[in-house]
Image 1 (cartoon, helix red, strand yellow):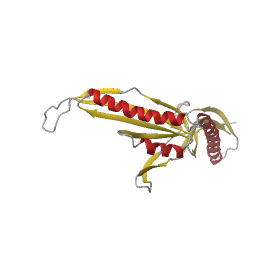
Image 2 (cartoon, rainbow, N blue to C red):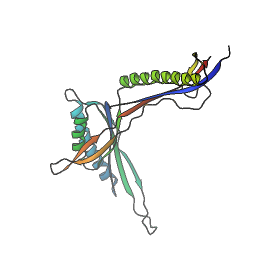
Image 3 (cartoon, rainbow, N blue to C red):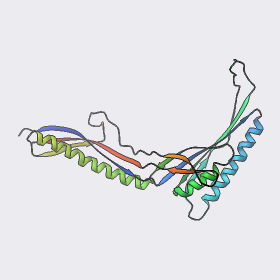
Image 4 (cartoon, one colour):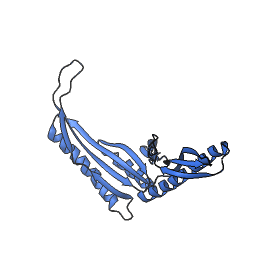
Amino acid sequence: MNETVITVQGHDAAWYSPERATVQLGIGFDGPDRQSVFEATTRAAETVRSMVVALSEAQSSPISRWSSDSVSVWSERPWNNEGKQLPLVFHAAITFTVRFSDFDVMAHWLDAVAAVDSVTVGGIEWSLTAARKAAVLADAQSLAVTDALTRATVFARSLGLETVRAIALADPGMLGDHGSAPVPLARGAMMMADSGAGRSGIALTPQRIEVSASVDARFVAS
């Protein structure tokens, strides 16, 4: 009996609400005196650190983990618009990374910490927990296989063939075709909104997370 080889790629994608948010904070000062720049950065960092610790040690803390760098100090000699080299300028900076499980608490905390002098909210990375991510990715991979079978069956039927049997299944590109491995995607946004109390408040708009998977499959149809 003649058999026809059919090679297809199956795909699946689904969207999920984020369960974790990792905040990147930066603190930085600059000026003509190295020691004063260093001390100002250290003071601001201690203020932020105390705010992180207070929340992380609270009962049912919304902070699952956090870290901070040591203070970095460097200098440069800038040039003005007339091509003249200016005196040394010293810079100092430190970053904090804080991961939250409660987004409402995070919004209020960010509103407070953003008021500390020279603190910049660098960004927020939205994510799923590791266990949830593994589970939904496994679901996506299983559904990608089902999608590949459906595609192969459609091809076979168009040729008047009735039986479809899998002979190879692999991550994208491993059957000799170019492709990319499934990667969960996480995206988020943060915007400033009027708090209604005469000052700015931080309103968070987390984007849903896309988890996708692709699979290459080879079938024989007869």
